[in-house]
Amino acid sequence: QVQLVESGGGLVQPGGSLRLSCAASENIGYAMGWARQAPGKQRESIATIFRDNSTNYADSVKGRFNISMDTTKNTVYLQMNNLKSEDTAVYYCNYQRYNNKGSLADYWGQGTQVTVSS
Figure 1 (cartoon, rainbow, N blue to C red):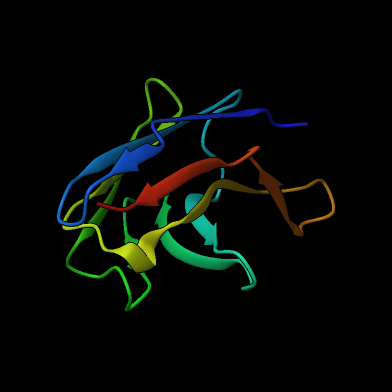
Figure 2 (figure 1 turned 60 degrees about the horizontal axis):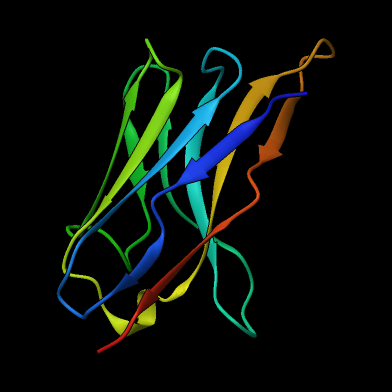
């Protein structure tokens, strides 16, 4: 079982910045990323980084958010800039690796609240 520890959420004004961190208990497997869930909405994936350092972003955050990783610390970061009220949500760290059956397994962090408000 992979353990994920998130940090960095909080309250920020519109236009501000926050950086989220997620430390994994194991070496980064297939990919790590971030998803978020706003009240009354489904969880959506917003940023993913793969072992080869390639990245994917949801259109809603492209150009404002940046995902990076430090493989020496098994840690993924999400730098969030120019935050908007619609970014308010619980943010979840995601870890993916192949299991012994060759299937991708997902692990999730406990979530950290990000609130964008004046």
